[in-house]
Image (cartoon, rainbow, N blue to C red):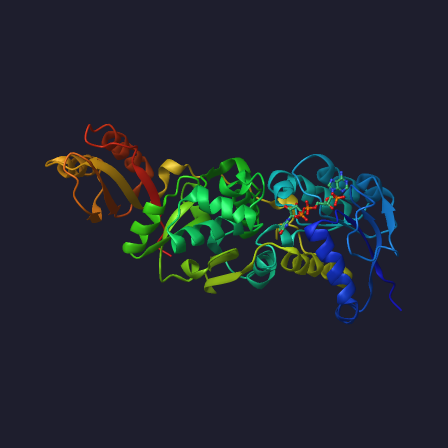
Length: 430
Ligand SMILES: NC(=O)c1ccc[n+]([C@@H]2O[C@H](COP(=O)([O-])OP(=O)(O)OC[C@H]3O[C@@H](n4cnc5c(N)ncnc54)[C@H](OP(=O)(O)O)[C@@H]3O)[C@@H](O)[C@H]2O)c1
């Protein structure tokens, strides 16, 4: 008889609670699939008295999660506390140095310290798994690392933050402005009290750093990511985008270019009929371009107790089965250091919205600024007339370098007849 796999779980919140519920509900299924039982030997959270609606009677309680990582009689430590520093980091480091495998859902920790943790784990002969850290329940890490292991990957594009996708979907459907929809999302529990990590693109960037490493076999480089959030997306831009046949999505994109790895997080116009545009509400999606497989898209729920538990338990099952794959798909000491391709070198099409004085000659001045920067316009929209007032003028361009676009926008923004700073949103031809 093979002995059960003993695990210690640090953090019993949304993800930890979901994980324990799944392990209990599917104990038989898991035993059948692993050939051994999975036993929760120890748990830790902040408040021992809290009623968690979980049966914790068989598990030893630890007030100190780091002490648990060191001393608990377990082969695996499951870190579900969160945060890139402090307790979560100590729990993972201690577990590894004590010779225990680690499963975590902690994208912030991996984006900043994943390579160091992977090196430590591999030198100790233990594994570090993190399926739930990227796109929650969507098995994109396994998809990339295992299912697509035979492919050269050229690009990964993802909707990686459910809060942002919900807000943008809701803005489009209701015509309301960002602030109002954010408030509604908070009331519905789709946005946190402090939503800045989500809406400013940081959470997406954490996940993108991890995807880049797995896709390209390189070290994570969070600092090399160009990050913009969705605070400045307006109802007006969403409506214009729709009229032009696009939707606005917050995307994380990582791409190999001649200048290095281009990693960027920002709102994008995507064709309304593209597969990724149809991924709405809190759903996540990851699109991968592989040289043999072609384009492939994973999609599903990126957060919540059930989907994240699904991913965490898949990692636990891998360990129970004895699966041991290098953390970021290639051994940690073989991960390449690829330079970050600067944003000025990005090439793509652009959407520009200007608020201009409705008078003759203005469009000619704008067109001249674009022409002088070598940018050619693809389409232009202008609605309504407001003699002496401001009217919105919207343009899309053909592909150009970001540096040229920045130069043109500086000149256009300085024109007397242009009232507000120009709004620019990049167009992704998906
Ligand atoms: N929520 C999601 O849908 C989701 C999706 C993907 C990834 N993640 C990641 O999963 C991790 C956990 O997220 P969550 O949403 O489950 O968080 P959460 O609901 O806030 O739960 C955090 C848990 O950690 C415990 N904790 C906090 N400080 C602790 C300490 N010093 N010692 C021991 N335990 C401590 C808390 O204890 P108390 O219960 O006693 O307060 C709580 O049980 C994060 O890394 C997050 O980024 C979450």
